Length: 414
Ligand SMILES: [Cu+2]
Image (cartoon, rainbow, N blue to C red; front, side):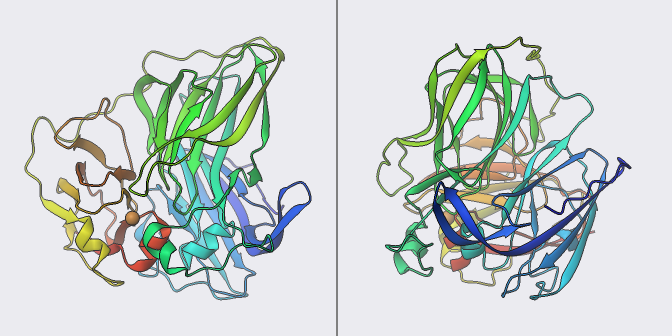
């Protein structure tokens, strides 16, 4: 690994080389994949709010690539899309440099030929910590993914027309690049799990052995207060932070996806990992009653400023442009899904709040950058463009849909 962390805490310098690798996703089972610094997922980048992140990307692949900083409020020219930078050609380098302004669980991934480059493994987590993080016994990052193999056990060919419509799902279920791993946790302890759905298409209705857990955060950092739950739907691109535990010694707890119908029929329950509970250890974890203050952007009802028809978006083609938005002008967008499939809508570079889903307010206000819009449903979001003018975009985070043109560029103007 070629991560270089400078002792100066104001600057975090990281070298990321994208290159081919033999990805050992299970004992004695390898596929020819892509990785950052020879690993899948790439190294977890850790920083504190206000740090300057300096990432030297070197492209050791035989095809162009870039990095998109999913969820980070970066300057437009650092966003990694084809509208703001020329793709980094094989053998070339590019330096990403920006301040990380928000605490939360983010991730980075290629934004060129994404369906293939992400499936092959070009992604990693980026954790930004604030000054007042709650205290847990342990913290871990879990990147959830799947892998579609062919009959030879290699990554299946891309471009299947069925996949383009339905998305690509694979039978190999991965956590941190490993097929259904076993994780260890001491009895009596409570951990913070930062969960990222890095799959091309797979929806994960996450259950941890049907045990209750506390939701601590979403895409854009902590919730106002912990929220008790026994399951949470995590669609591609989304993140959740959970407080997990305590468990009793000797327990085996399955981390699984419960059945979910995203418009392609109900899925089977599927195991992603097993949690093995070891001997008891003392705990210093405390889950505070309040985590942070989030003021709603919209009080009561608000007139939408824009309607985004996901059906029109789906059929609009590769180079759609939406109207510009002006810095400082509140955006209230109705995301209308008239199609027969759920679509996770991702807005680059800005956080939004869910105002209502089918007319109902969400149980809690939170900051999001990706939201599932269920089929035949409508989600109203609100967001405020802060002063980062430039070219931005939104798209469906089912990567095959994005590749088919379910996206639009727009400008943020002063
Ligand atoms: Cu979609």
